[in-house]
Length: 185
Image (tube, rainbow, N blue to C red; front, side, top):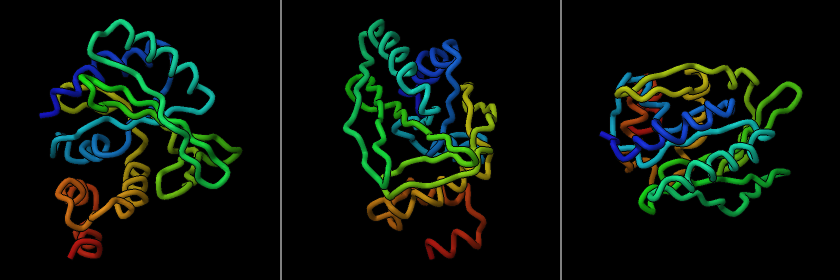
């Protein structure tokens, strides 16, 4: 399952690590760590990096992608929410987005992520790195509390979220049975 993500885990993320750029996986892949295995096909890997390292990450990923015939890097239009204009990088493998990179903005006592549904402030503890492994792929996520908090912040903004099987599968893993019933039954 998710073999098409292999270049993300074996080439792109290690390239960031080699350049001393911290990253945190969030979204469906991070949710799967609650089950300690992939629970569904995940179309891509979502990561955030510190905003001050975004340009360096772009440069590193461009260099890596230029050496790979089937991986291309694209910078997306800015997402404007509140006082933020958030950039996004997409690594496409065989013309399909497989890695999404967004910045996390550090403030004195908080870390800010900008999503399609708005700006969300988190404790700086979201930047604690937890090493994970799924199907032999090694990577880092925020602590479980923040993986869940990001999921709770984002899933209801998705179109037709109550009917989407991918969201239901993730929800069954990350939510308590009471929380699942609250949202889906």
